[in-house]
Amino acid sequence: MEKIKTVYIHIPFCNNICSYCDFCKVVYNPEWVEAYFKRLEEEIDNAYMGEELETLYIGGGTPSSLNIEELEKLFKILKKFKKSKDIEFTFECNINDLEEDKLRFLYKNGVNRLSVGIESFDEDKLKFMKRECDFKIARESINLARKIGFQNINLDLMYAIPNETLKVLKKDLSKLLKLKPEHISTYSLIIEKNTLVGLNKIQPIEEEKDAREYEVICKILKKNGYEHYEVSNFAKKSYKSKHNLTYWNNQEYYGFGCGASGFVAAIRYENTKSLTEYLKGNFISSKALMGKVDNMENELILGLRKLEGISLEEFYDKYEENMQNIFPIKPLVKSGELIFKDGRIFIDPKKLYVMNEILIKLI
Ligand code: SF4
Image (cartoon, rainbow, N blue to C red; front, side, top):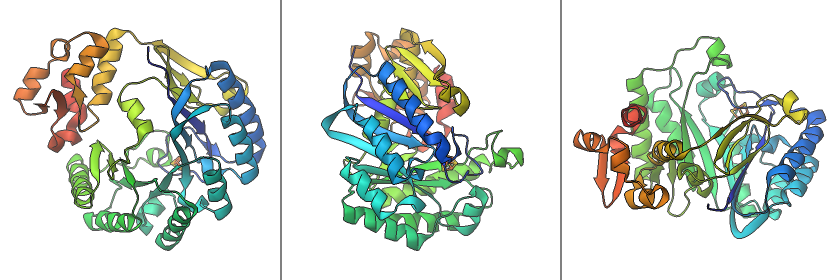
């Protein structure tokens, strides 16, 4: 079995709760941080086997809501991990938290990739999402991060917001591009039951409109030199997210923290989303042993998210099975939904927005 090379750590604190957020999060409260770190350290000590990491991702929540003193404590825990020389070390930030001392601290302590929540610059969209972002401040913050040394920055963008016009979306994209990020992640609004928008019974935009917005994003980003390498992710040459590729390549990884999930020793597990339970030391809420069939299905579901799809040879090397014998690939190649080229199977890029329907036909 391949050794684990990836760690995800969840920091569930946020200064502000967005209207659509379904992640595991609580409003930042300094009184909980210390107790949280104590449990986090315990969880890591129980599970981590000393593997050398190639990617380390601190996500949330909003890790940048922590103050310097708290960051020092967190990074003391992170010292436990053995890191490879060229590790991709990502830290998620809110655009309004990029203060100079924090950025310097992160850079000095090995973070070499920032993933920054921008989501939009449009007043109405921001109001709907209950977020804040000012283009001028964002530009200054990103420039500051660059000056300090960060050369790999991801920016998040949200779309498919009710009442968002194509003009608004294009304006958001144009401003985002002015910040010259190496990587862009896009998120189509999903209305989940237990969020503010869900409770307010906001309806999602029509599928056709969503697909049209997606098409515009893909076209504009491609035109500006970004490779569309995963359904929702775009990168400049050699800036694909190594961390997320671990997930899409169906490789094992550790997930630590409240609400994190992981895949270790053939077991997929979910940690509790309840901070109270986590602080009691009840970390894992569910786990499932992945058999060969589960793994092959996940390989397909996750692998087809990548535009380059799945190599039939690699699939065979991993499972000693021909992919075409396990899944009904041929009819979908015939219908044009899947493409078979140079030994790889992938979804026709023009049909990515109906990916779920294609996957249902396959499994
Ligand atoms: S979307 Fe991000 S910043 Fe907003 S509440 Fe959720 S985790 Fe916090």
